[in-house]
Figure 1 (cartoon, rainbow, N blue to C red):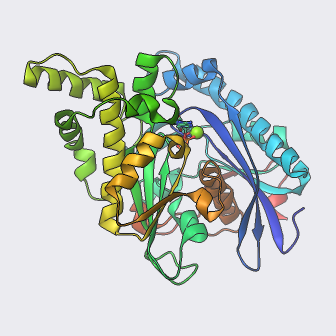
Figure 2: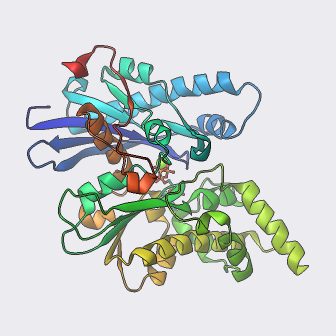
Figure 3: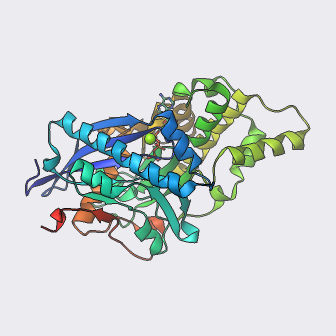
Length: 386
Ligand SMILES: Nc1ncnc2c1ncn2[C@@H]1O[C@H](COP(=O)(O)OP(=O)(O)OP(=O)(O)O)[C@@H](O)[C@H]1O
Ligand SMILES: [Mg+2]
C-alpha cells in the first residue's frame, strides 16, 4: 500500500525484440529513495500481434488504422501485465500511485524530430483504474535530444558505486550502455550513455529466417558457427559505430535489409560462395559483442552489469567477457536485480519522476538542451493532482 514514506509504481516495457511485455511492481521509499522490485511478470506477444507490430515498422497502406488497433490491443495487454504484477505481489490497483508505460516503438527518427511509441494510454488507465505516464521520449527530442536512452539516470540510481566505475549494458533488441563513474551517491552529472547498436535484433531475425524459431536459445546455433572477419569488419565500418554520442538507434537502422546488403557486398567482393547461415549468425554475435565491448573499453569500468534478454544468450556473453578480461562481467542478478526487470523498473521510476515533477532525462546522455520532466499523463480521475 502507498504511504507517505513509500509509494508503489508499475513499469511496463515492450521493446524492439517484440517478444513480450515486461511488467514490474516497485516500491519507492521516500526517505532513502531506495527502490525495491516486488514482482516481475512477462506477457508474451501472440504471433499475430508480433506480425502486426512488425508490419508497422515500415510504411504501408492502411497503417494508420492498424496503428490505432494495435495501440488499443497493447493497452489491454499492458493492463493484463500490470494486473498480474499487482496480483503476484498481493496488492490491488488502488494501492498503485501510477503506471509508467513505454509503449511500442514503431519509428525512431530523433534527427527529424520525432519518435513514435504506440499505446492507447487512456484505455490503459481506464482498464487498470490507475493513472498512466506515457510518451516519455518526445519531450527530450523536442529539446534537441535523442529521446534515448532514458535508462542511465535509473541505472545510476540503482547500480552506481562510490568506489568504482561501473557500466550497465542492457542487451535488448538494441543494446545500450550506461557509464556510472565512481561518484557521490545520487549524483548523475558524470553519467554517460548511448545505444551501442544491435543487441539481439539481427541475431533474432536471422535465426528466425533460417531456423524458424524466434531466437537462438542460449546462442547454441551461433556457438557452432565461425565468425567471418571480412564480414565483421564491413559491418563494423557502418557509420553509426563511428559517430560520437549522443546517439540512439533502432530497427529502422539495423534490420535484415541492412544485413542482406552486407552479405551481397561480401559475396561479390570475394567472388566466393555465400557464407553458411550459421557462420553469419556467429558473425552477428561477434558484431554485438564487439560493439558492446568497445563501448565498455572506452569507459574502463571495473564492473560491467548486463541485463535484458541477451543475458540468456550464453554464446554472446562468453564473447563479451572474452573481450573484457580487465573487467568483472556479470548479470545484474549478481546485484540482486532480475535482468528482465531492469528496463521495466526504469519506466516505473520515470513515472515517479513525472508524478513528482522531476526531470527524467540526462542532457549529457541524450544531447537535449536541458533537463526535462518527461511524459504525458492519462489520469481521467484527476487523482495525481490531489
Ligand atoms: N534463453 C535465451 N537464449 C538466447 N536469447 C534469449 C533467451 N531469452 C531471451 N533471449 C533474447 O532476449 C530477447 C528479448 O530481450 P528483451 O526483452 O530484453 O529485449 P527487448 O524487448 O528488445 O527490450 P528493450 O528494448 O527494453 O531492451 C529475445 O528476443 C532473445 O533475443
Ligand atoms: Mg522484451
